Amino acid sequence: MRGVPAMKRRLIAYSIDVTKFIAANNVLVTNVAVVNTGTASTTVTLNATSPYATTVSGTELTGTRAVKNNLTTLYPRFSGDGFAVANGALTRSVTVAAGQTVTVKAQLGLVATEITTAGG
Image 1 (cartoon, rainbow, N blue to C red):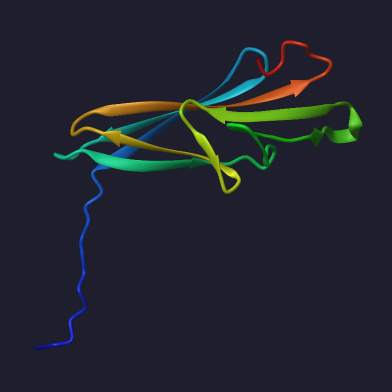
Image 2 (cartoon, rainbow, N blue to C red):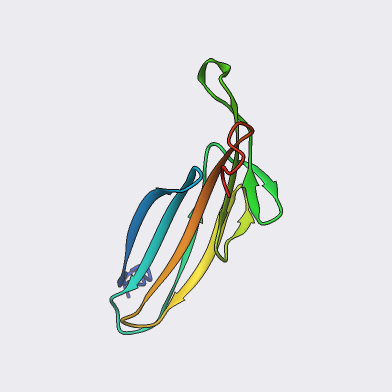
């Protein structure tokens, strides 16, 4: 017998479609559609991070960011539908049936004291 390493091949049978936009009240939104192009269900783990929101606060990440020339201070709030906070990131696993699509959303609100409706 030859010393052949045991290898497992895995065909990745999904694609990710990302849509980003800025909604009302300074909320940056990212929709992620996981499309399963395979013939069996698959589970995908999604992680999201932001350099502006790194402090754990319940199920979201928060932070403080001074704006250039100290014009104001932003208080970012980063969360996602069904996401949990782990290791400084938002994380979520989604299981997608064969031939189906699951869409999830993450949002980063930029709250400022001068804009009372910001981030919400």
